Length: 162
Image (cartoon, rainbow, N blue to C red; front, side, top):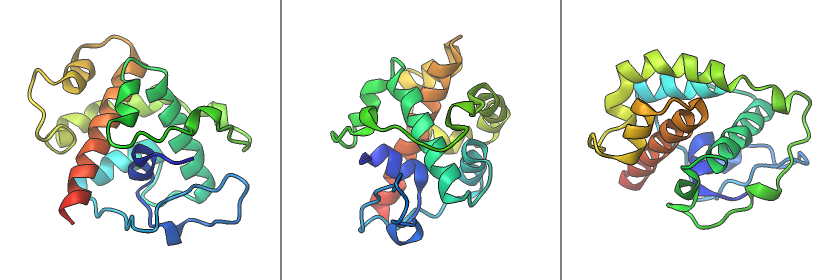
């Protein structure tokens, strides 16, 4: 599956991901990963369960989170940075793929956003659609999609600076 949002979520160098599995995660060779500060590291840990998840966990969660964004009103945000969309045909084969506790991820993110909001929403004013959705939506998948996009857009800005 190719998409820059997914590459940013995964945040690994292509050489750090095993190319031998059937569910191989393509990461462009020129992507070197982004060094995360403390707030962004907390966010990464909340969505992936650790600072360095194994390849299967990384694939499973990244693909599920992309599908959350794709199924939300925020879906156009998936192609804002990269128009390639191949995730709709992707089926992850690992056992437990559908068992990711999305509400649990959101529950973990809620208190974290207060402490690292400056990082996730940096450069986004109070009228920004991602911030407004995060702050005001009662639909947890919409809130999750909005904060995931804000996070990946923030990483994209950091990536462009390096």
